[in-house]
Image 1 (tube, helix red, strand yellow):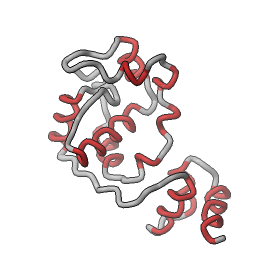
Image 2 (cartoon, rainbow, N blue to C red):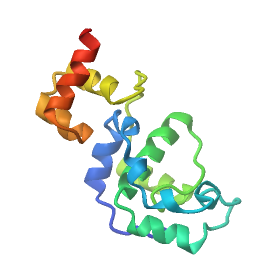
Image 3 (tube, helix red, strand yellow):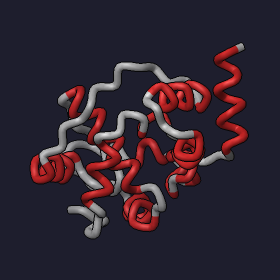
Length: 151
C-alpha cells in the first residue's frame, strides 16, 4: 500500500543520490511533527498498518519525498527496512528501490550543522548562491558559515 501514488521518481532518485539530504532539516517541516506519539504510530507491529491519521499526514506532507529518500538512503546502507517513511511500508520501499535501481553514495562525512554542510558543499566547488538555496538561507548567511571555518 502506498498512499502517495504520485511520487516524483526523478526527484526521489536525485534526493537519494545526494548524500547531504539526511543532513538537511526537512523533518522540521514534516506534517507528523505535531502528532501525538508520532514515533510509535509509524512503527507498528509486523504486518500492521499505522493509524489512518498518521497515513493521512503522510499524504498531505510537504516533505514526504524527502522522508522516503532518507529511509531509502539508510536502508540501502544498513540492509534493514522498518517502519513507515514517506507514507510507504518497508515492502513498498523495497519495490521502489528495486524498480528505480537506486544505489546510494555512502556518507563519508559527519555533518553536525548547516555551517558544516556549507563547508562541505563549498569543497565540492558549489557556488555561494547554490549553497544558499540548498540550505534555505541567504548568501550572506553562507558567507558567515564559511567565515566561521576560516577563523
